[in-house]
Amino acid sequence: MFSHVILGVNDLERSKKFYDALLGTLGIGPGIANNNRYFYRTPAGNFGITTPINGEPATHGNGSTIGFKMASPEQADAFHTAGIANGGATCEDPPGWRDNGFGGLYLAYLRDPDGNKLCALHRPAK
Image 1: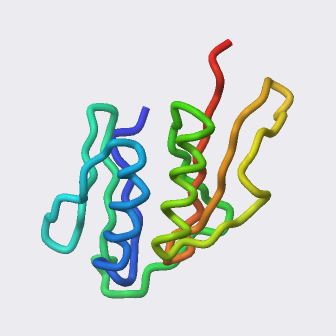
Image 2: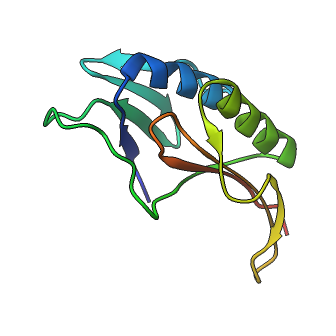
């Protein structure tokens, strides 16, 4: 459904360090520079970070979440741990299983250094 997601950040190099570590837990290589942006490219889509083109400060969207698909609860935990170790902050409930009424999900939420909310989500096969 999506070709790419780009987040605005205020400190491009600080955010690159954060996302290099975070996405590295998914086997994605370091961000590739492109002007004032870094892109993380995969066969399933692209994720990017950029300083805002209009020169205004980047802000997070209240109520917005970007979810990353995880292969296992252990991968979700590694993703969360890497984010916290590289300038992120945990949010929501601690990582763990949740029942959403449609079956169990393993979720791990955190915020990046600019406050964007991220979710590591593992949905077991049925």
